[in-house]
Length: 371
Image (tube, rainbow, N blue to C red; front, side, top):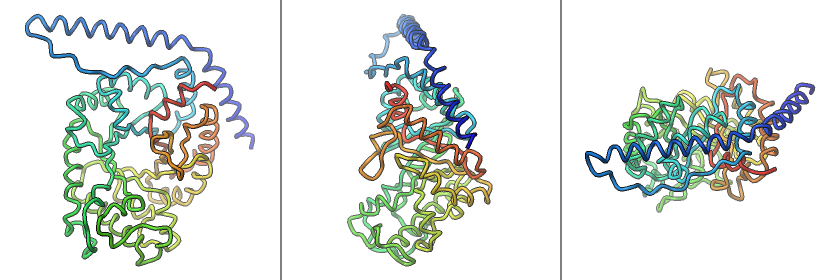
């Protein structure tokens, strides 16, 4: 109990300390202006021998107010001891930073983010533009691993009258998904692929449905169970096809809970961990403390296998709904109090490997907010 009080006292002290350094904003703006002048001079010098290329349309840089730096220092201190601190980068956010990845890298470092997951959200490699190699190279130079996150949604957008076989090597419907994964693996600077398994969300996308995920269709042999078997077979097939390449899987916590209760044949942490170099479990709730408590059995199972879990928490209204409430809707202090309380429960669990924020724009909003 005293440890909890000490942590809260330290957190409050961090807030007071963070408020002393508002001058960083002006320093950053000065350095950014100097960088622009140097860049313009370099373009002018290069134009002596050949005409310069036409200027690229660039979105206005996102401004960072003094609160950003104050809050970022507090957040970084709180997360410093975690093995993994990740952040998802949406395609919308990539568009903001594709021409200035160093600006994003600065924000990531200030907030204590150690790796990113670039969401593809339907983008193919070409859709990211010719800036993607430079973006990835900048991340690698900064020592920030960059994963590409892909969902299995495209699998469920294909007609499938029935499941004749649950072995993905005998099903043609996953070929386009494999092609997308291969294209991203082929990109220099990609640290690995994150595959999000979403039968509970996307099974209704099929035009001809034999099985659709539902709240009342659990049980061995039921629709949810058949879809779960197919997801597991798909993940196993992808692991086999891309053997030796870094692969992470992303799943909701309910898979393990339902499988452990006997309502699904597969879906436990012990089923997916052997297939993944990193297993990310979503905990989308406005009160992460309760979610992390609920994940306790999953941490224990992961610890028994020697592979800790990364917990994904929701920090962006872009991904929220009536079911999932974003943590970015409150103030920064409220967010940090919730995170501090939640992390206190699991910080010392050997099966807990860190957090990943969905997504970083929500974190930026929190860092910039007034109290």
